[in-house]
Length: 218
Image (cartoon, rainbow, N blue to C red; front, top):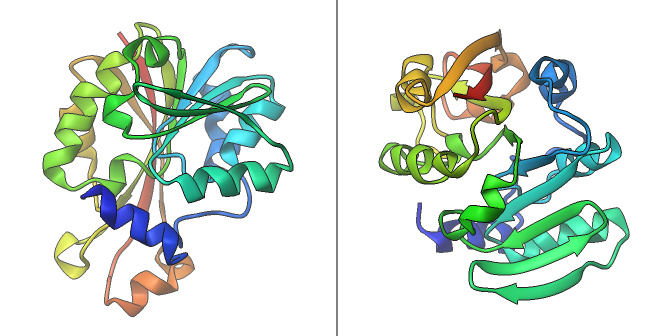
């Protein structure tokens, strides 16, 4: 997707992917990750996700990457804090306490910054990208994460011909193709969520599941 697509979505407040509470599957499965409190968690395509605030409340440091300046501003407004702001080659860095949110292109994010993250949480990044970008994303972004990094990846699965993404359907075989060369991939749960997603039903989608994987960098 071109950057203007997402910037327009935020300008027009078409952000149905945003949740008003931390992700339930994150709360359920994060203990299985085994990430040490105090370590840094990478949250790609973070939006204004409250998952970042949850990680901070659990004693983690957070590195988020988000393209939209509106999303970044709204996140800190929701937390009632005024971040310090610093411009750098890879984007505009907003820092408040244990949270650093970089407004810029996730593909351009400083490699050393990503390499400092021993955990990752990907709820809406991989599935936001069309197929040709997912391969690049796995290679160039996940490829910067260090050995021993652990995390969770959440995907959606539905008949792609029934709906134009984003979000896109990313099936288990593609997840394994993208990651298993460098990561141990464990499917933790798959659940049917079609009844809870009226927007998908309205578009004629006949089946919808979400899957969550535990990842560990070799």
